[in-house]
Amino acid sequence: MTEGYRWSKQLFLTLLAAGVLAGMSGLAAAKPPKNPAATFPAQYEEEEGKPPPGFRGLLDIRIQSGSGRLHPPGELVISNSSGETLGFDPRYHYTYREIAGGSYRRAVIPGRPSIEEAVLHINDAAGGVYSLRVIGTGYGQYRLIMKGYDREVSHADLLFTIMIQPGEVHHYLINYDNVGGVSLRARRTRTRD
Image (cartoon, rainbow, N blue to C red):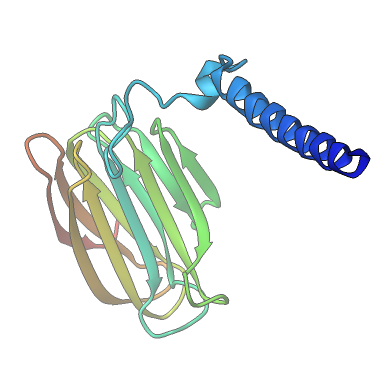
């Protein structure tokens, strides 16, 4: 009887421990969370690819070397219809930063770690007419890449590949519209200032 009692007691303790553990996990799941926001999904989720609220559009203009050189042979300066200017003019060693939401910087081309491009970026760009100048800093071919995005993040792309030399200035007139679909048109108007 002592042996049977031990087995019964051991079986009882094992079942009791299993029941207690099962009950504890059930109780833990039944308790309300300390921070409900951390465990419950948000009331709404932004759809992937949708712009943030208030997004008006975007202009992205890049210049690269068209002949595989490390640096582009020119700099970019853009002006909007209000006369505000953005970019770098190497003739006067002057950087313009007048357009709200705009930036001008050098960046490494993805997949080509030693090759740079100059990037002119205007976030929340207003639709209208822009005047762009490509100011030559070296001899060679450049690739001018323009992208315009509308409020729904649809985009239009333009590409120009042209030769330039130091001191030469290429003027472009850009028509950009970001309402009711994106529209981006550009034409080179003249060489020189």
